[in-house]
Each structure stands twice: as structure tokens, then as C-alpha cells.
Image (cartoon, rainbow, N blue to C red):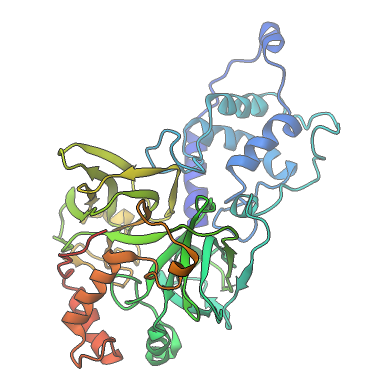
Length: 492
């Protein structure tokens, strides 16, 4: 049986705990005068609330909750050790304060955790300034902080059942919106209902074509990887990973949700060791102020993805030209288990290269969308670049059902296939929508995804009806297992 995420985290934590010590001398009287003994109420609870409970709560992928004093007290030494080793919290980007939700412990916070573990894990005095130790930290506080009450909540009609063990698998659930008019989203939040949810991608389908594909799929369980194959012309509008920190788009910016559109939630399930059920909730927050700039989403990906067997350090690149000034709001990178690192950058017309987002140690279990604190402006004539690094010589000890062999691996929708794409959420600077303009603008995704759809239809729409039928989809899916089509002509 393949170990669950919770088991892997627990095993890693215990291994660190076995190999580390606090390496702190007993406090002297001078130390005590200089640094008062920390306590849970005033010192530790704020750290745990800010950095830990987004994952360490019930019905999450973490192996245990950290929502009460008793939860934290009995694991104080372990928490101090993994914090000292910087194993937790698991913040993957090489960022320096430019991203929202940057989840790194400061030197002061690590020191407090170390001293609290070494000095009797005091609860602290009861006072109006600190919460009662019996009060649990509010759950999901990071996912909805500052967002308020959602304007709409969507839930699937059926519950997904996840077996206790077996290989990873993907499921797509269809959420009809049934809105009579276009809406503009300022935020979109997914609340999974199971610890077996590894991550999810969220799509908008204005054609209702996915309903047809779901109807002909075995058991009505549509299982393909989204924007790269079968979910055309659906467009990515968001994603979710453990510890996600959703936020509203900047004032005046909104993502168009077309009237009557379906929202598709593509979920990656990883059996946790016990049977589970999942019925996610999708929270929609509408723009209340006038929308002047559409939030668009465009993928940057390689033309071909073919990983030769038994080779490491395989570099794969992709580019997308910028034809007008844009402001990048966030980036959602996506690879699978053979991914080793990914970097998104900008190459200016003067051939100057800069990095937008770098994840030097890719981990498929920690996928997320990364939002910039301030939009990053990119000038027309620049090129968005992506470089992904893969390892297709996985040691036997690191294999599971998703990495079964070291043969040729190509782009595809099965867990044993690979992907390499970075979804760019951006606005076009010159755009200024008025009330009369909004209804006629293209859907989120912009020219880049429109260009991709044209390529898909040209290659696989053999009866020229403007859609991909189930039979055409079967041919398309087989083709994608051999690589990726050329995306020439895709622009922002």
C-alpha cells in the first residue's frame, strides 16, 4: 500500500526528531532576565495560528491537529526541532517578501518555540489580552480571512468515495452556476471535504462540453487532466493546495464568470489509509465595485514534453510573447512527481532576464497558486519564460504507483504521465471597461488560451463542427501521450 501524505509527513518529522536536538544550554539567571520565559497564550499560540493550523487541523492532509494548547504542548519538542531544521512550515518558493502568504518562521519565532519547549511549556497567565487555553484556534481562518461571507456557494450533487488504498487518481465534478447574467469574481475559494484531497484545479466551461464527456466516461467519472487535453475549451480560473492563502484580486480587477457556465473542479486524490468521502464547497466572491480590468489566465508551457528513460536533470522550456503591457497578479505552476524544479521569468526586449517565481525543490504534494503583494508590470515586447527540470531516473525506494517505471514519459492525463505548465493570472494595462463594454469581452484566458483552442480544433475536430466529440477526444488523448502539439501563435 502506498503511504499517505499524512504518513509521509509524520515519518519525516519523526526522522528529524530522532536526528536533531534542541542544542540549547540550560538558561542562566542572566538569560532569564534578558528573555522572559515564553508561554502558550501570549507567545506560541500566535505562531501556531499564523503558520501551522492552515494544514494541521481536522480533515486536512496533516498527520495531527495543532488547534489547542494540549495539541501543541504534547508535541512541543518535535515542533521546535522541525522548525529549527526549517522542514516546517513547507514554503517552497524562493521568495523574499514579494508573495502573499509567505509562510516562513522568523528567527525570533524559532527561538520562542525552542525556549518554550526547553522551559516547561507554560500555559501562561489568564488575562483579557490572551485567549483561554481551552479555546481552539478557529479552523480555515487563513482561507477566508478578510473575504467575508461568500456571495454564492456551489456543491456537487454527488459525494466522491475514496478507497482506503490504491493508486492516486483524478476526478472531475461539474458545478453548474445557473447565473442568469455574467458575474465578475474577486476571489474563489475551494474547501475540500476530505484529507485525501492532494490538490485541485478549477476550470470554467462555457460550452457545457464537459457534461457530454462526463456522460460518456465509464461510470460518469471524468478523469482527465484539464486544460492540456480533454477539458478544452474549459479554462483554468484557480487552484487549491494544502495551506492555500486565497485573496481578492486588486480593486477594479475581476475574473469573468460567464452566465450559465459550468465550473469544473478537477481533484487529485491520494488514498489516506482509510475509506473517505469528499463533497467540496466552492465559495464565490463577486466584485461589488465597477470592474475596469479583466483578470485573464494564460498558460506558459513547452511545445513538446518527452522525458527519456533513466536520465536526470532534464531541462524543458516554454515561452509566451507579451504583445501589450500587462500586470501579473499570480502564478500557478504545475508539474507531477518527476518534476525537480521550475522557474518563471521575464526576458525583456533588451534581452535582460529576471525571475518572477522560482521553486528550486519541486514537491508535488505542495502545489499552490502564488499571489504577488503588488502586481508585477511587464512591458510589451517581453517574453514570459518557463524552465522546468525533471528527473526520470527515480530510485526504487522513491517509487509509488504514480512513478512505476523509468521508461519514456510524455505529456498526458494519467498519474504516471507528466505535465509542465505555469498558469499566469494577469490584467492588460490598457484595458478600461465601462458598463457597456463588460458583456462583450472575451472570457478569462485571453488570446493565449483562444490560440490553444484553435490549435486543438484544427488538429482533432475531424468533422469540423467546432467541438471535440467523445470519439475525437479518444484520438486526441492518445496523441497527447506522445507529446504536445505546437503552440505557435499563442500570445498575451
